[in-house]
Image 1 (cartoon, helix red, strand yellow):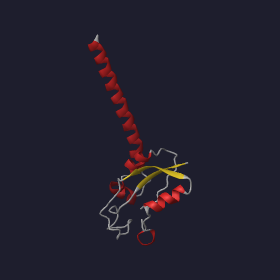
Image 2 (image 1 turned 60 degrees about the vertical axis):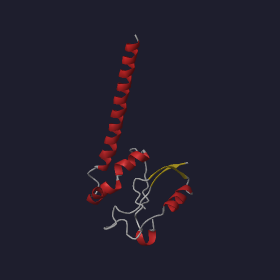
Image 3 (image 1 turned 120 degrees about the horizontal axis):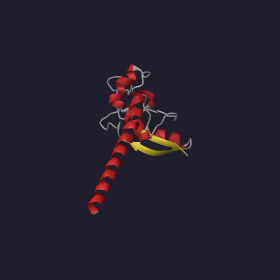
Image 4 (image 1 turned 90 degrees about the vertical axis):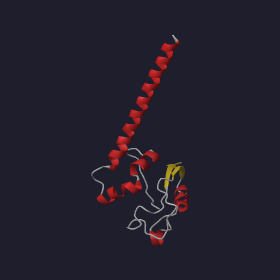
Length: 135
């Protein structure tokens, strides 16, 4: 009897794991399909290895129909970057709250001397990822 119960529990756990993994792969397909959309420019596709767009969409929980704001990185005047603190303050004064952060695009070795969107700095500058929710 006990063996039968353990066997049943093992099957239930295995089935649950399969369902969870298959649900995760469906979500991955959604994000990967968005990133591989034929309407994206060649320049965007080239930057994907450095920008990790599918991973960022997963982190943020972005779904079809949601609105997204991409504010970029810091030193807006000369290097075309935006400070993280400025971004947080600007969004919070408009009624948003930070709900998640990621260091996925952090580059602590960035000396903040290169423009972020052209070589040689392209994909090699310190960037930040913030997820906001409207209050």
